[in-house]
Amino acid sequence: MFIRLAQQHRQFVRDLVMTLKALAIALENKGYLASCYTCGAEMSSASFMVSLKDEHLIRFLVSDYGITWTEMRDDRELMKLEGAEAIAQLQDLADLVKYQIQPPQPQNRNSQQAEYIPSA
Image 1 (cartoon, one colour):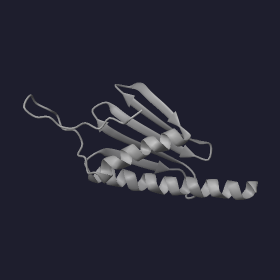
Image 2 (cartoon, rainbow, N blue to C red):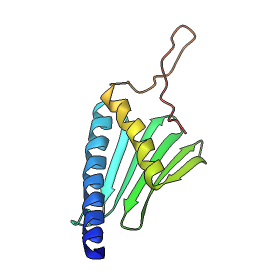
Image 3 (spheres, one colour):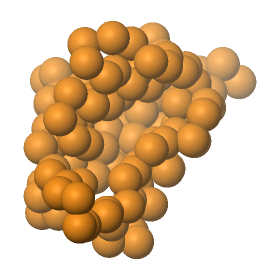
Image 4 (cartoon, rainbow, N blue to C red):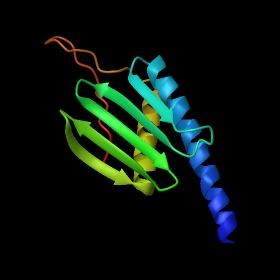
């Protein structure tokens, strides 16, 4: 039973890594600065980062050892989530692409834009 669970976990991590790579590409196509780096050909870990606006950075790490979501603004950590909570937060970010919300633009007094703020 444990061997089967270990294999399922490895497959889950590989699927998550592939999804992160696709999300990084989709976010880049929408005008965001995004990247996804993997270690080795096994796809057993990844580091995903996206800049949502000036000084607002999301970092998502996945490996066999765990999953973390870290949100930073002005070089300060605002939120750190792990496991299922981190994946749920990643879904909110994926919805950003799905619903085609554009990255925030510099605002002047006469314009207002919706700003993506992940839910806690």
